[in-house]
Image (tube, rainbow, N blue to C red):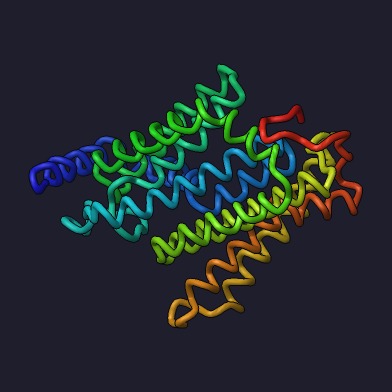
Length: 306
């Protein structure tokens, strides 16, 4: 592996010489487009303003993907370029390198969006974002090219496994009662966290539980629709995002920190609340504030017209 890492380091140095420093800002933007904070806002946009069903689909697969990425990083335990040459690192990064979480998540999120929407412009946008995000990780010196390639491959495998089976999975879920939905929504995230308990998986599985429980409640009891005029959608995004950011930042300050023996539990709880707000709390509030129309019937897990 040492020879591959040395080759990868040479590629990182070459990419930095070719594109930098003039394109530092551009590559930092691309990297931000696969950061946790950006996905929180993007998924909120889908949930509240574009297509609730599509938002649900992307959120659930994205969170399971990030869990798998955390596990794979721990299994492979590969270094990052900065571990061999610290001066090439141009952005903060933690943990092991393979596979690249940014490359994997962008493949899953934008690939799933393109598969669902089936629009040429969406495929072009997805390709540009996936390629740009992957290249940015190499340019910023936080991943070897092999890490990025690994992330793309794992993301593509996840899509390849899920997409042909989505109708069966979503059909089974629609046929179940509330009790089964809540059991699945809680048992799977808790079970996966117990299998691999660490900071990243507590975040991912907490969010997954919150989102999944919220979906079960919203589909049955909150007749929310993402339709409405542009000003109404904008108002939903503004109101929902203000509360979302408040929960995201506020809970991190009041709940026990990393030094506490119950840190994983508090982190799990923090992200569960954030996920629950996105999939249930916000739609419920939007209806109460008359910022959203009422849908005529319970939506399916497939994308609906906005």
